[in-house]
Amino acid sequence: MTGRSAVLQGAREAAGVPAAVLVAGYIGFGALAAGHGLPLPAVVASTVAVWALPAQLILVEMYTVGAPLVATVLAAMLSSARFLPMTLTLMPMMRHARYRGWHYLVAAQLLSLTGWAMAMARFADIETARRLPWFFGFTLVCIAASAAATAIGFAVAEAITPLVKIGLVFLAPTYYLLILLGSVRDRATAYALACGAVAGPLAYLVAPEWGVLIAGLGGGTLAFLLLPGRRP
Amino acid sequence: MNTLVVLVIACALATYVWRGLGAAISGRVRAEGPLFTWFGCVAYAMLAGLVARIVITPLGTLETTELWHRLGAAAIALAAYFLFTRRNLFVGVIAGGLAIIGLYSF
Image 1: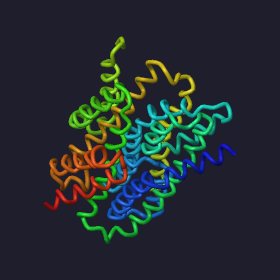
Image 2 (image 1 turned 90 degrees about the vertical axis):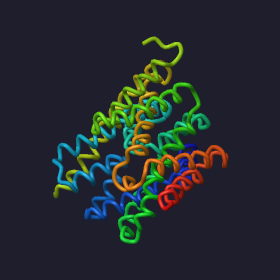
Image 3 (image 1 turned 120 degrees about the horizontal axis):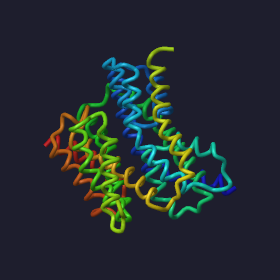
């Protein structure tokens, strides 16, 4: 019963601020896609299947301007490179003899920034065997709420004024800003956030399509090398 | 199948490349050690870079706002989160959304 209660615990923790913020972000996304004239089922399907808001925004924008399929898929892939370090850091924390390999391949699909950041912050207080079911409960509530919000945003797009839309769109970066700064517990995190924050806008100026990747690899490596006691 | 359906599936697979790869090889990476620290640094730097880029040079809806609107709203959100509440994420986030509407209308 450990598993089931952990699933419910994760679901309960998602069904509050994390889901509310995702709902706000995905209402904005749904409204945007409706304005571009895309069909509702494909837009909602993108939330469930892609489950990465930057990649979804790229998909909608590039499809609208008629970009080649290969270019769009490559851009979505590059924008999602963050999932590699995210899964690499998170999966070892959820490893337990009780679970099979494919459980982690499913968990990887359910991962998002919200789930990752919350798991990284919460896992210190959750025993190892309960972490994977907690993660399933947390992320499934996030995905269900986001899919519903995408449909709602699509439906109410006409009613959203530009001013309200600005407020809604700004909720997502604000959420990321607070949760990242709130997760600073050691020197490595602090250095990485500082280096990344400087590298991000600079890399974007140099190479917009590659900016996120360059900022992560460059800023992250610089932060790592700056840590005391490290040898390059 | 129409192009959009193919595109959604292709983008889903494109994001899964990183997810699946990370899950598959993570077993060989110890949770402690320099490599683990480095991956953490890259993850945090990448996300911090993305957030900073969105605030400083946004695309889409936020393009109509000024830089000081966005920086001001971010500062208000940070103050609401760290100073005025004891790290209440919901209050902080809503404060950011209301602040940019207020500053933009100002």
